[in-house]
Amino acid sequence: MFSRISTAAVVAQLAMGVVASPCKVPTINSTVAAWQAKYPGATVQSADVVIVGGGSSGSNAAINLVDAGKSILLIEKKAQLGGMVDSFTDPTTGTVYDFGVATFTNLTGTEAYFERLGISTKSPTFGATTPYYVDFTTGQTIDYVAPDVVSEFAALGVYHDVVAQYQDLFFPSYANWPAPEDIPEDLLMPFGDFAVKYNLNDTMLLLWAGIGAGLADMLDLPALYVMQTFGAPTAAVFLGTDVQYVPESGRNQDIYDAVASILGDAVMLNSMVTESVRLANNQGVALLVENQVSGDYTIVTAERLVMAIEPTASNLAPFATDSTESAVFNKGTWSVVSTGLVQHPSLPADALIYNLPASAANGNDFAYPEPPFVDYFEAVGDGYFQAIVVGWEGFTVEEAQALAQDAIEKLADAGTIDPTNGVPLTIAAWSDHGPMDMRSTKEDLQAGFIQDQYALQGYRSTYWTGAAFSNQLSTYLWAYNLEYLVPLVVASF
Ligand SMILES: Cc1cc2nc3c(=O)[nH]c(=O)nc-3n(C[C@H](O)[C@H](O)[C@H](O)COP(=O)(O)OP(=O)(O)OC[C@H]3O[C@@H](n4cnc5c(N)ncnc54)[C@H](O)[C@@H]3O)c2cc1C
Ligand SMILES: *[C@@H]1O[C@H](CO)[C@@H](O)[C@H](O)[C@H]1NC(C)=O
Ligand SMILES: *[C@@H]1O[C@H](CO)[C@@H](O)[C@H](O)[C@H]1NC(C)=O
Ligand SMILES: *[C@@H]1O[C@H](CO)[C@@H](O)[C@H](O)[C@H]1NC(C)=O
Image 1 (cartoon, rainbow, N blue to C red):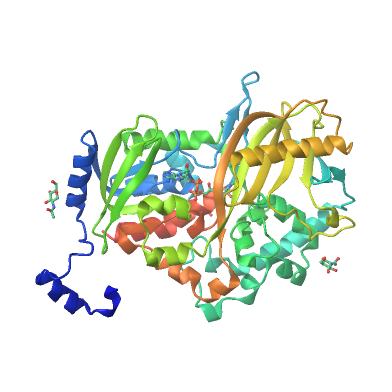
Image 2 (cartoon, protein in one colour; image 1 turned 90 degrees about the vertical axis):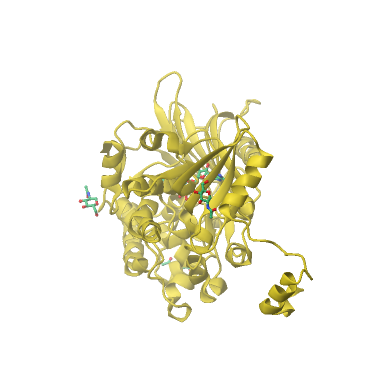
C-alpha cells in the first residue's frame, strides 16, 4: 500500500501523526533492552564478530578471525564443533571409525591450519573391499561392467584437466565468476552432457561415489556443481598426484576439539538463535540465543555476523531474511544426506555394495538411483559398514534408517546376501547431515544467481561462508575463508 506513496509524503504524514509508524527500525540497544525485559535472566555478551554454525567453515573462520585480532563468539547447535565430522569409537576394540568426513586434501593454508591447531597429520590408509553392484529396489545383482582401472584413471585425468582449466572461476570463491553472458557453456550444460562430450564414461561411477551422492541428480544439474563438489584437487588425490591427510590420531573430531579448546568460552554449544536484528551499513547485529539443554537465553551483540550454516528457509527463519535475501535463497535446491555406521550378519565382511538401477547393466555408466536411496554399504572393519542415504529436503532420519533396513531385506530376499532370519540392522551410530549441496539451475545462473548471492556479502552486517557460498569440501572452505571471506570481514571494520 505504501509503495505508491513517496517517502517524502510518508515522512510528512508521520510527522503530522496521520499514519502510525509502520515499523520503527530498532537499534541494537533498544533490542537488547526489549529482550532483557522479556527474558530477565538473560546474560549479554558482545564480540566484534559472531559466527553461527561451528562446522568446517564456521570453526575455521573463528580461528582465522581470532588470529586477525578480532573477538568472536561461535554459536553451534550441537554439543560439539565439527559439523559433518562423525568419529565413532568401537567400545570393544577402541578403533575409531570416521563415518562422516573422511580425509582432507592439501590446499593453500591446509597444513598451516593443522599446525595452528597442533594437529599432526598422516596419509590415510584404506582397507580393500569387494564391489557388488545391486539394484536396491529389487535386491538383485545387476550385470554392471566396471571399467578397468587404467581406463578409469585415463578418464579421470581428462576430467581433472578440464576442471583445472575452469576452477579459478569458482574455487575457492566465486570472486572471479564471470558475467552471465561469459559463463562457459561447459559449466552450464547438464553434467550428463558434459560427461558425454569429454567421454568420461569410465570414471562416472568413481565421480558418483566421490561426491557421496549428495548431488542426487548428478546427470541433470549444471556441470559446475559437480566440479565444485569433486574439484581438480580431489581428482589429483585419486590420480595419486597430490597428497591427502587425516590426523595422526586417526580421529577427525580431534581437529574440532582443538578448535574448541583454543576458542574456550567464546564457543556456545547446544545453542540456537531464536530471534535477531541485523542492521544495514555494518551497524551490527543482535541475536537472541537459546541454550537447547539449559533453556537459558544469551543476548549476543556484535559488529558483524558470519553465517556458516546452510541457508535453507527453515535455518534462516530466526534471521528474518528480507526480500533481497530470500530472492536468492529461494532459488536454492538441497539434498539431504545421512550417514550411518551399521552392522548386519548377512552383509559380506569385505563388501562395498553399490546401489545402481537395473538400467546400469551392460556398461551403461549413465544410470543412477532416484532419491530417496541408499547410496552404498561399505565395509570399514570390525563388522561395521558405512551407509549413506540421500533424499530431497524434508527427508527424515527415520525414513533414511527405514530405507537402509529395507535394502538389507531386499538383498536377502533376492538371495544376493545371506537370509536375515529376521535379524534387523544394528545402527551403531547415525548422523543427519541435513540439507547440503545447494545448487541452482542453468537459467538462474544465466540470470545472475551467483552475482546476487555474492552481493549479500556485508548486506545487513552479515557475511556468508559454508558450502553454499564456496565448494563442498572442508579444505576448500578453509581456503575460501583464508583467501576471501576473512579478509573481507576484517577489511569491513
Ligand atoms: C558422508 C559425507 C562425507 C564427507 N566426506 C568428506 C571428506 O572426506 N572430506 C571433506 O573435506 N569433506 C567431506 N564432506 C563434506 C564436508 O563435510 C562438508 O561439505 C562441510 O562439512 C561443509 O561445511 P559447512 O561449514 O558448510 O557445514 P557443516 O560442516 O555442516 O557445519 C554447519 C554447522 O552448523 C550447525 N548448525 C546448523 N544449523 C544451525 C543453527 N541454526 N544454529 C547453530 N548451528 C547450526 C551444524 O550443527 C554444523 O555444526 C563429506 C560430507 C558428507 C555428507
Ligand atoms: C548502547 O549501549 C552501549 C552499552 O550500554 C553504550 O555504550 C552505547 O553508547 C549505546 N549506544 C547508543 C547509540 O545509545
Ligand atoms: C601442501 O600444499 C602447500 C600449498 O599448496 C604446499 O606448499 C605443500 O608443499 C603441500 N604439501 C605436500 C606434502 O604436497
Ligand atoms: C558413453 O556413454 C554414452 C551414454 O550412455 C554413450 O552414448 C556413449 O556411446 C558411451 N561412449 C563410449 C565410448 O562407450
